[in-house]
Amino acid sequence: MDAPTLCTIGELLVEFVSHKKGCGLRTIADYSGPYPSGAPAIFLDQAARMGARTRMYGGLGEDGFGQLLRDRLDRDGVGTEGVENVPGRTTGTAFVSYYDDGRRDFIFHLANTAADGFSFDAGTLPDGDLVLHVSAASLGAAPLRHAIMRGVEAVLSRGGRITCDPNARPELLRDDAAREALEYVVARSWCLMPSTSDLGFLYPDLDESAAIDRLLDSSAEIVAVKRGAGGATLVGHGERHDLPGHAVTEIDPTGAGDGFCGTLVALLLQGRPLAEAGRLANAAGAIAVTRRGPMEGNSTPAEIEAFLASSLNPEGKSA
Ligand code: ATP
Ligand code: MG
Image (cartoon, rainbow, N blue to C red):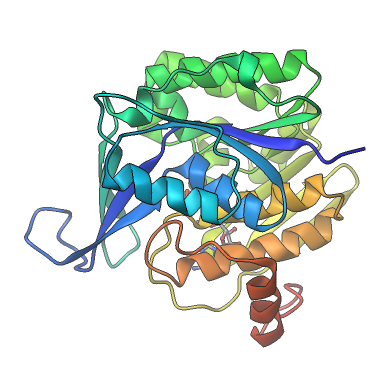
């Protein structure tokens, strides 16, 4: 049987990254960008690089930023039939600045831009087996949430599967509609890829292993716990793989989670075993943090293999 088409619905934007730390976007500093960004786009770009057949649904302005994004997705083989040029709207933008302890400040301009102004028609989803990835931060914006939830219903009604990065940020969870949508998606996901802090937000009363068991008791067959510099844990029914993080110099951590998830899901859909898909995803996440720009950290299978060959921790089994 053909591999499924992996779809995302959500924000496309360009990001500007401050080179100065500790100023929280409050002072004049050098920035670089525009870097292609948007969690669903970073995820899908990485999945396409790993050989997945993909389809992105999102909106771009008819401007230079929009052209940059379209060129990047086309270059990397992402299916862009669902990427719409939205007349009269500009491309979404974001600005990010880091602190020395790893915290970051974002300013997003997404509301009333092309990023949340596209129309999604579930009837245009591709034929054949479907997998829809939900990047839960998108659920905080009502127009995106409505489009994504229509996509979730359409894919489930066709017997397709959902994957989800819960990205359960507190500012998202304060909104009841967003939280309900997140819980609905989490309960129906085949593969869930929370960070450790996402697990804490989803299940404040459970320890980590109880939270993982809870997820595996609903629809999830695979849970991947992302631990930043600490690596990742991959859990399926009857198997568990704890992978320590690779030693790298962190330049820009934004997008590592999306690159990890895109690698993992793309390889699982191509029938690769969980241990192997996880090993490559753990490497893809490590590579991602070494490059400035959220999508610039995405990598090819050859780059991942070369990284693993040169890493002090090539098997991802012991530090
Ligand atoms: P974000 O939401 O910011 O994109 P996330 O919280 O979803 O990120 P992280 O845990 O930060 O995800 O990163 C995903 C994966 O990338 C980790 O599980 C790990 O495999 C790898 N990774 C991230 N940061 C580092 C690091 N500093 N060193 C080595 N590997 C890293
Ligand atoms: Mg995350």
